[in-house]
Amino acid sequence: MNYSIFAPSDSRKYLRMAVAAFFFVQGLSFAAWASRIPDIKNMLHLTEGGLGTVLLALPIGLMASLPISGWMVTHYGSKKMVLIGAVLYAITLAFIGFVTRTEQLVIALFAFGLWGNLTNIAVNTQAVAVEQEYGKSIMASFHGLWSLAGFVSAMIGSFFISVHIPPYIHFSVIALAAFVIIFTAYKHTMPDSERNNGEAQPLFVKPDRDLLTLGLIGFCAMVCEGVMFDWSGVYFQEVVHVPASMTTLGYVAFMGTMTGGRFAGDWLANRLGRKKMLQISGCLMGIGLATAVLFPFMIPATLGFLLVGFGVSSVVPLVYSAAGKSNTMSAGMALAAVSSISFIGFLIGPPLIGIVAQFADLRWSFAIVGILASLTAYLSTKAKLIS
Image (cartoon, rainbow, N blue to C red; front, side, top):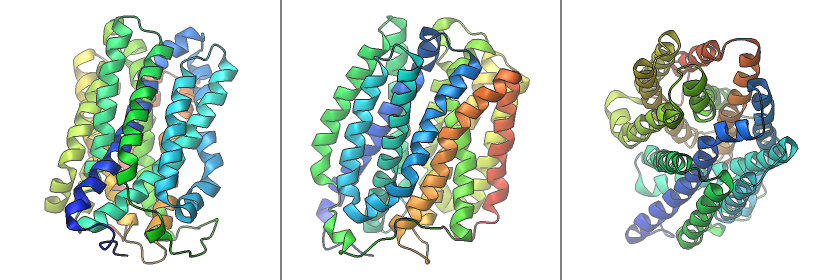
């Protein structure tokens, strides 16, 4: 569908900046939480298995939202849903900072997963519409803003940790910044009514084989991405044994190359081809994690995390862009199906790794993630919607 009458050429940049702002808010909020996981783990006296169990609240919240999030975005419009989702996401982040008991953290993380999935589907639906306005691939740049926000948030987290700022102050500051960005950008996002056209939308959508393949590619990559977010600090603390002030080193390395890779992703995909780009990405993820597992020392582990970041960077943008080209359902519903499958990997990977680590070494738990991430290269050869 062409939305050009609602977004003339002189306003496309405002649409793009507004949608990018919501990607930035989501990345800023999630990375703030990720950067303080070791602190909250210690504060609540959680074991690795205990942390892994608690982290299950996030994917449970996500899965609870799966039957309705795609429908809500398509029925009520992504403009309304991205506002509601982003505001509730930031509020929930602030609440996480005030938890004092494990059960409180479980409830807060459940809500964080719920609003995170709603925001994710809504903002990517907005991005697909803006990409159609430009008539070329710009999806990777949106996800680059998400990664840039994560990198900035990780640096902020490192600073707050170094000066002993407690999580509740840290998260409240980030939430306040998110509110300012949200309400500044909201009025420039793509209008709802022009996309819905009053058409009845199904509540449940079963993805076809091609969309399922795309979802599985995204799932494998986002398992890796989710583990890097939630466990990189713990890995450097407990396996690499870096000083306390350097526990975020691996996370910052990963975020740095993931951010740079996403800003270069559209350019590289156009020259190498999307299928080859995905194959290279899967290999880089596998090699990077193998390096960190086989050589658990500061320099090689950091280099390994750098490779993982670059490998992860382009997978999800390429998958989401391909989903928008589905011939079997609308772009919004196809994206909702694929992004939901992918995002399950982002949230279910970390708690499962924690549970495995309780019975085996955390180092070898990362090896499992590396094998799974490498499957991205194989699955990309089966994806008909990726050329």
